Image (cartoon, rainbow, N blue to C red; front, side, top):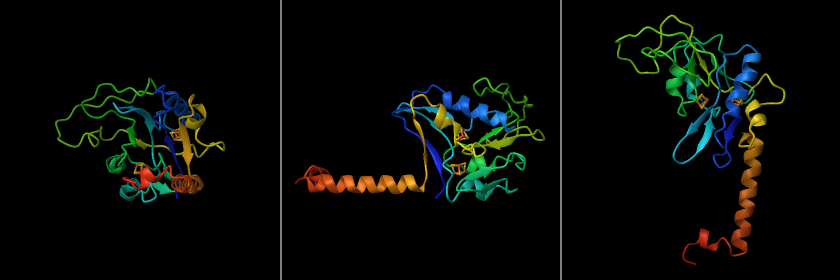
Amino acid sequence: MNRFVIADPKLCIGCYTCEVGCVEVHVKVGLVGIPRLTVTHTVAGTMPMQCRHCDDAPCEQVCPVKAITFEDRSIQLNESVCIGCKMCALACPFGVITPYGALPQGETSMTYGGFLQPTPAPVTETPVHALLAWTVGQRTVAVKCDLCHFLPEGPECIRVCPTNALRLVDEETVITSNAERRAASVEAIATGDGLALHHPGL
Ligand code: SF4
Ligand code: SF4
């Protein structure tokens, strides 16, 4: 099973510290300077969204130049190989791949928390999907969470979050969590506390 980082919306306070930490560590190793996770606000709650490192990753399947590969129980995107076609961004069901480097056509400014600014693009009338309408010929690459694979201590976002809203999920985590939930269910049923839950009407 691939590993991935996930946030708890009950703990996230929307402070953007994870985004800042993400940019800092990636810029230091020469990678694109935008966050690999996006703090997302909805009426129901707030939390950062990032790659789930799908075991059968749609982004990996559609990449025409094999810039996205399965490595060390994760899905990695090689920014040097990427040709900026944005097919992976279209294919990702979570919307967590960000094309970066030029502006979408028609846009005059785009800010990622005050980080690096992309080059303005000329306007075109060509009717294409917004994710594909980027400046042709300019260096745009797809950017996504890489689990900070270059850091021995693991993902930076987990360390910098002031409310501990982020955690790494791996196979061990799932096995332990399932075992705990099964045990809790048995205890609840055996003591009668779970009867109403599992057998409504009793
Ligand atoms: S970028 Fe999207 S499709 Fe690709 S592995 Fe991550 S969540 Fe899955
Ligand atoms: S795990 Fe690393 S790359 Fe992924 S969102 Fe967190 S800081 Fe960014």
